[in-house]
Length: 118
Image 1: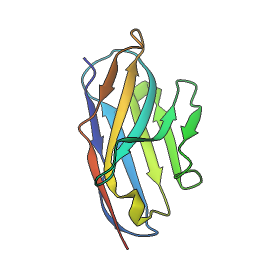
Image 2: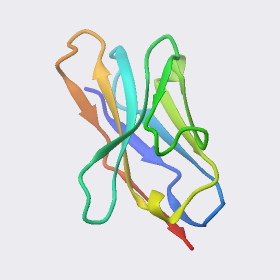
Image 3: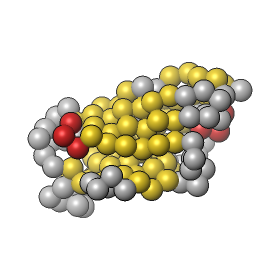
């Protein structure tokens, strides 16, 4: 069973940086695409960025040029480098992973809080 664990959230001032990590600590199952999503106060969960097994990234317009997604397939770990943070980036950030053998199965982490002060 895939168990995703996020880390790296916290409080940062506007213009600062944070690096989030998402590690699969539960299994040796293969993982396909991975992604980061966020849920801001009073908002629905939205896509931040995804990355496939060939390391091809996809970003939401709101974070292009500021966030960088990457992954280490050998470690089943994904990262999100967040630079030039803005107060509107404040949210709970969730990582997810698509099962490599069952693409209809998606795993989610528990979320990590990112708060950007103005």
